[in-house]
Image (cartoon, rainbow, N blue to C red; front, side, top):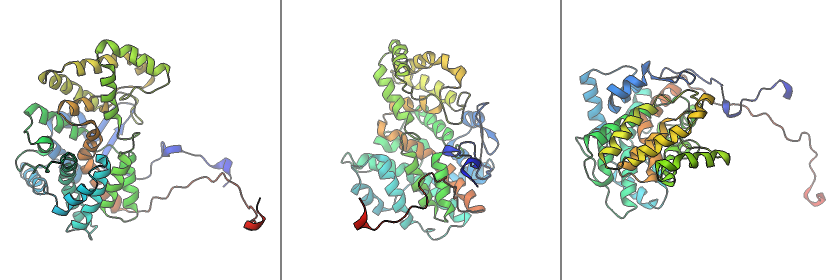
Length: 379
């Protein structure tokens, strides 16, 4: 094949590399479904635990099945003692780097570490679902010179995550909104981190290796950093009346307005609206309505760009939720990982099911048939 006959799809845009039964996305219409269930229904009526079960098992659970799954997750919240030593060794690292290191180390302590069957991979993935938030919050406390907070045995996944921040049980509204955030982030097709996890699984590496690689991909600011950047933008704007000029200045300098636009969605991200109302309620409940007002002012300033397919995305409202719950900004990206473990788990299972080494091609554009010159004769 000549170079003229090769079509380059940079970033693999528009390329289908496999089939999946997990997540359906229609970017033009703004549709997201997990296992055929619309994200709007799941965000309004489901929980993270139920959604996690749905992703892993392909069906909504009965009450007995959900209770069993919930008990399994709660039983896995305690970390092996040696993992705290690992976290302590990297306590000065960014939380995503500490998380990546600790997840990799967990493989050595898992009872199924040598078993890559679907059943064992799901068991390991379920344990990681509970262990990842424990790692994030253990690192957060250890870096402050504090002891990690022992996880709750009664709170749900979202409530326990917030509880481990400082030992205070969150309000029902705060826990419910965080739960919704985790539902919305549970899977999202073949994004950069999920694709990375599948590439690693394609080599027949285990789920700990795949998730470690997924976390590394997620740590990059072009993938997981938007929520943190939106909160920084809101702080810089300061007041709602400053938003229009701030946005105008960014755009005139050809800079991005964080939290707008998406690689897939050309309509509004269907996840964003579910956090919008929650931010309004939570900001008012906590006596800080200005954050919601600033975000709304930015949305209004960006309205002319909607016809170009530049709409608000899920990260735009997520950062303020985390901030209002007292979560430090450098934990915003790890929260993404906390919600995404069920999605990565089932994608790894799917990859193993009909496994193939993922090996795309690169078009070579360098020199050819060059003559080797001995080093003494080189100029």
